[in-house]
Length: 490
Ligand SMILES: [Zn+2]
Image (tube, rainbow, N blue to C red; front, side, top):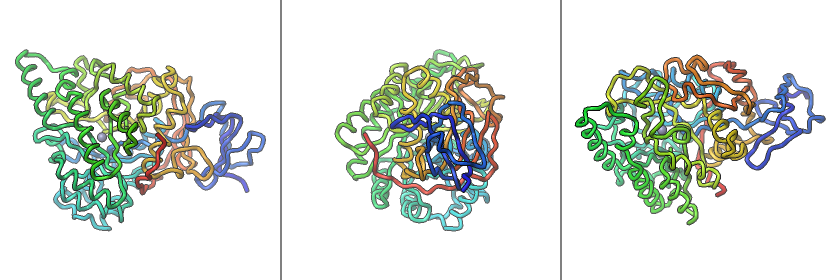
């Protein structure tokens, strides 16, 4: 038999070890062998990796493609799914979990009010078709549970749509920017507990944005008034001051307490303050089933960061906000100490030319293009983390937590051939021209020179990106069912 693909002359990276002197054999989209160079079989296509590293494709556990449905700013799920998943190939992402509202993913553009509860099978088929039509990577879906109606839909999501993780936010207070563009509020603790009980029945996991709405409402009003009295333009530090660390770690503690009380596993998204990392460490010491996610922009930037042509730092507004230098340091420590489990992007395609004032702006930054590169550059090449640790938090752990392992998340026999050849010495400066997927978006990384880039990305054995060019055909991505797998080494 002739194999479909052989990748030779590479250093094969998994969390446990780096394998030298071997190549990878791929057939029918799967890895069928890891063989000594001398024993590699014939193949339709042989790729010489020139001694570079071969990483498992990243599984981004936190994306939003087509998140905004407000017609004033929405680009459409089809548009953002195409740019988001193609952008992901540049950054070495081969699978992702996305949190969107169902109405945003339908061809027939239903309004929220028109979405049936529970969503019918026809609707799910349409969503699945729409995902597979527009994606070039494999995608799983995580619904946003906003109210009791959504809570009642949880059994349907699990049984019909094959979904095992559910997103909650408690930060969205009436009048907050997210409330203005989505019309929704965060959950109160009563709704949250009801949601957690429903999740327990289906064996799922709660994924939470942790921020106390009343603390941020209080602080935002206070800092906004102060800035207005001083008659100055608000800057990035003011945004952070309006959403202080205490709002995040107090909500984290409370949400973990509720999950523990109900008896379900807990996953904290985009963890940013050092106190939250410390709290995760404490909970893990106690043996709680809790998982900590961090995302690219909190690792790379802080509240003092400034960006090209942006002296006030407004493009750096994120929810939750950038913290301080010590918080960044604690995240790096948390990664090496095994407190941080997963690395995500929180990619929300940006909207260029925002005119609204800081407090009322909508948000979004394209993060997927630099997903592996920013960690290879600032982490691996600066000796903060090993390349094995990187693939652990970027690929294997997300696959293990969300039940995609052993199909995905590692380079091993029987796994999907989702892989990335990485040149650790390649240097590129991020510009809007470097990635066509940034054309109508915003990047925080403009002007930054990063060292360490994917040169080739394979999705199920198909060359999907080569030397900065997308070669994947539209619609080659698949809808992924997922579940909470209940297993992770701490
Ligand atoms: Zn998010």
